[in-house]
Amino acid sequence: MGTRVLIVDDDSGILESAALALEKVGHRVFRAASAAAAREIVADQRIDVVLSDIYMPGEDGLALLQSVVRRRNAPAVILMTARGSIETATLARRIGAFDYLAKPFDIAELLALVRSATTAPEEVVEEKIEPGPDTIMVGAHPSMVEMYKTMTRIASLDVPILILGESGSGKELVARAIHTFGARAEGPFVPINCGAIPDTLLENELFGSVRGAYTDSRGDRRGALSRGDGGTVFLDEIGDISPAFQVKLLRFLQDGLVTPLGSDKSHAVNVRVVAATHRDIKRLLAAGTFRQDLFFRLAGYEIRVPPLRERTSDIPLLVGHFRQRFLKQIGRESIAGPTRDVLNVLSEYAWPGNVRELEQAVRRAIIDCGSLTDAAVVARVIREIAFDESKAEQKPEAGRQKAEVEGSPDLGSLDDAERRHIEVVLQATNGNQTQAAYILGIERKTLARKIKRMGIDVRTEGVSS
Image (cartoon, rainbow, N blue to C red; front, side):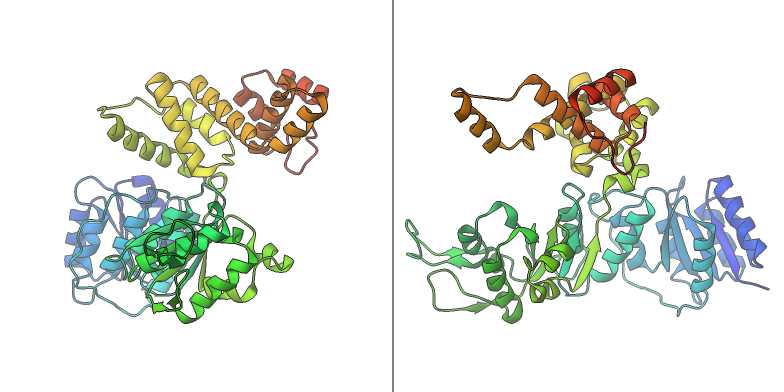
């Protein structure tokens, strides 16, 4: 007889499909629609593996896990969820779950997990688990669940971490979660945006200074590395620092000593360094603009944060999360929506600004109409945000040069602004003109005429009509 598997899920469709797949390869399957029914089966039968949903009416899967792992000869427990978060992944691992599976799951992945669970050594965790904090990260896409699992593995390991991901994808949230669930959680978390600070100020910000180190320096100043002693220092946009400052940072990473500006004395600090960048770090290394030895010091382990366009199935979860957050901010009891039409609009957009841009869109839509029920309002908000981004990307130098030639101020023509706006939206929709027309609030034929008249080049990979 094969492995004895107990499946626990209030969704009969998932329960039966998983059971049939397991039975087909020779496992004996037991079924339960609730945690209470599952505990009775575990008490009466020898069970090798428990495959349980987390969110069920009544007692949830985490409570079931906690009761099951305390049993003598406890079965391995694999938790399933369509609403994954770093909190549940970490809590499940701490209690003693064998693994964590995102819904919808691949049957081959499920079978492989059950197979590996029966060959894994038993491990029962006896510690008392307290409720987790407010959700730090939201996402149930398989790429996010894999990232959660990686984060829980490395959080307690005191190694430097390099987080890679696009702007707005949540790199600082990843860093904060690693700190929160790691051994340094009681220590400080000190974030520094390296890309926003010039070299001269960045050295002062990180290493500190003594009185008289520079003009108007009237007292000693502790730098971020000293303030983070015993905790974590998060160096965001590390790919933007100059080669000269890279040498100074490398020296600290090698010896752990901080020398404040204007001082000839050094002191040791004990910090975990987590760095992040939106740049292609491999390209920077190949170009020689980022030191290889510094890269190896920073990248004790690499984590890639998936962009939102690769996990659009998480958009409903994120919208609900931002909706609840905004409710607290404005003191309202409820906000209607999102409707299916609204979610369709949000899911069709490519979100070049990632989760940060989605949060802004949700907030502005609620402010504009008090709910998330009007798809036209949401589409307009996306258009406005894309237009704001296109204006932000304009180069002021070009405008100044043109003004000097013509002898008068120039803010750009309406046609120029419209062209830039259309280009941003086309880029955000990966060249899909039907989606772009919807977001722009114009007919597909009208957009085609504008593209032709303005000479916008749409002959790029992934363009669709």
